[in-house]
Amino acid sequence: MRLPACGLLSRDQVAAAVPVRGVLNGRRAPRPTACGFTLRDGTPVLVTVEWVARDSEEAERVYLGEVDSLYKEGATPRPVSPTLRIVRGLHLEDVFDTALIRSGRVIVRVTAQHSPGAIRRIALLVERRL
Image (tube, rainbow, N blue to C red; front, side, top):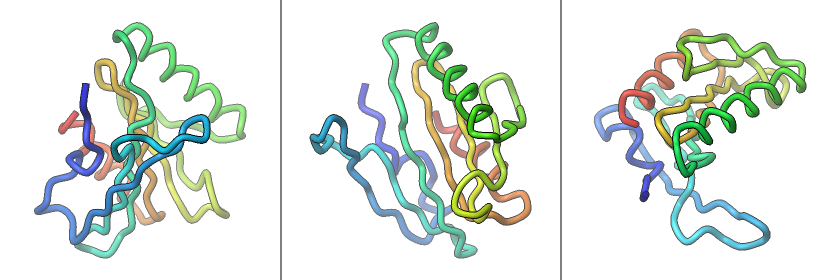
């Protein structure tokens, strides 16, 4: 399955998009696994394809494990739906908010600069495109 992170927000929603290649076990990914966006209002956003599972059951286990790890970090993931959780102010002195999304076999993390309603709006846009 080929899932381009930069295709998870549409061009009419962003001012700029920059593909980012991840590193796994010291090796650079063959394709971008994340995309840095600047929204039209200037909000910086990072969308990362965290995992593509063999099947939806594996994806659910990984997703719930990620949610559990957020709790262990002291965060309180707020459910928006069974497959979307939002954490406000998790990283970098509460400057950024995070959303974790599962759709079918895919798990995506969205990180956005903290602003009222931004992470929910962005996460729902990404979830619709998955």
